[in-house]
Image (cartoon, rainbow over all chains, first blue to last red; front, side, top):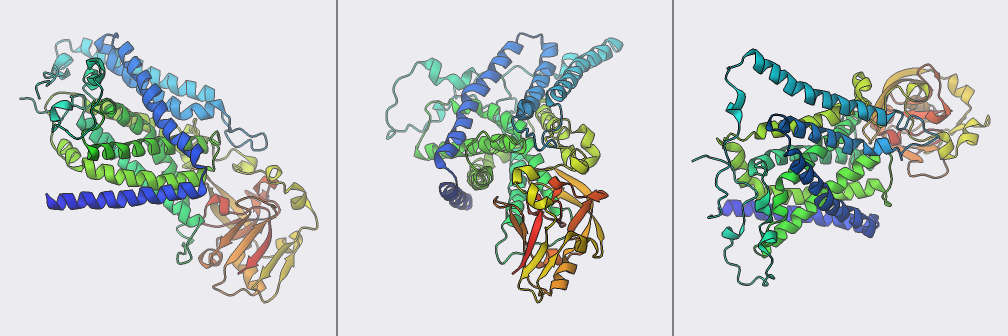
Length: 157
Length: 399
């Protein structure tokens, strides 16, 4: 227990020293106000806008039949992540007329192709599962992997 | 009893050790104070958070170390000298830096979704220590989002933030690594316990985790071809593609943007070698072309993660410096024709200028250098950041 406490104290000391070092560099080399706006702004927008949007998407897809829900949510998750990373490319603010090799591709079209491929996989997976089930009508599987019902919420704890 | 990791949606109030000294919180409706319990997905649990945290930790530590490599190569302290080999060291580390950063985007979003109920816990802090812990988690979360958001924007040349990216990215890295160290110390025991215990509750965590890793995989697969050229055709969402650019090579800064077009085309252009030399040299392009030509296959490797190989022909830097009579342990400052700019000059230390692959290149891929690639003459060396492969060279100063 004491060794554990010592390790934790050392981690706090080292971590706070690193944070202090980084902050001192920010104060010296970077316009602090603008930096802080992006630092806190990213967290606020994430927690206040992005996650609530994801929660809404989760609630909406909750109405989809269980058989398709999981694969639909998986496809949405992958598609949303790829889109998030590709947005600056699609917007293309980084294009420069004098450097055509910078952002040289048609990113809107490419993103559509990637999203289409994700969608195709999302359609193919349940279709293949359904075919397999039809071929082996009473094989093991089906609902066997369904999660057990959640335990009592544990309000008593 | 079903063994299962702790959900992150359970109320914390039961665990309160009765905090008498904390300021009295206003009475809020139960709808607000029990928000975490309203999350229905059971994937908000410790085991999911722990696995995502481990994957994120690996990405962040890799990005931190490879970022330090780039920083130290560009700003080496006096006691530190980088070797010129392996040729692709810089290229591989920076490709890794950007790819781990991109892979971290889905991981971070999934991790934050998993622990989101904890954000809404009531009361916000159980004790002063807990308040400090949460403040440090905010530093970790804000810093992580900051690094990934501005990092992705930077590799796509979208400078919507009004600060210099490089310094902000560099200093913020220390902040999040410090906060990460503290976070690991706080979570180690819990994460170890939950990862080491196989749950028997039938919850499909693995499907969720594999989907998130799959998202990282798709992001990397559609980008990594910007540095791994056999996969170039797959890089449909990469800001660069090897093979696209003048003379089949991407360009970072054009001659027009650098304001050197007239100077570089001037027939009176001379390469001068000066400083601590026994004979100063002033060579015309014809005189340089008459020197022994060497060929080297070397990459331009950018800190932004892309790289592209080319066949360069030119004069060995060490031949030129031997002609001028420079000392073996001398350093060289390579100066561009550019009048201003952060990367107008670069330092070449002895291991690099002694390397037979280090050239002042006059030709690339079988043609005279394009103006945008540094005509009339540019530096190209192994294991070196792209911004230090100085273009439009006018002067070598031996120091």
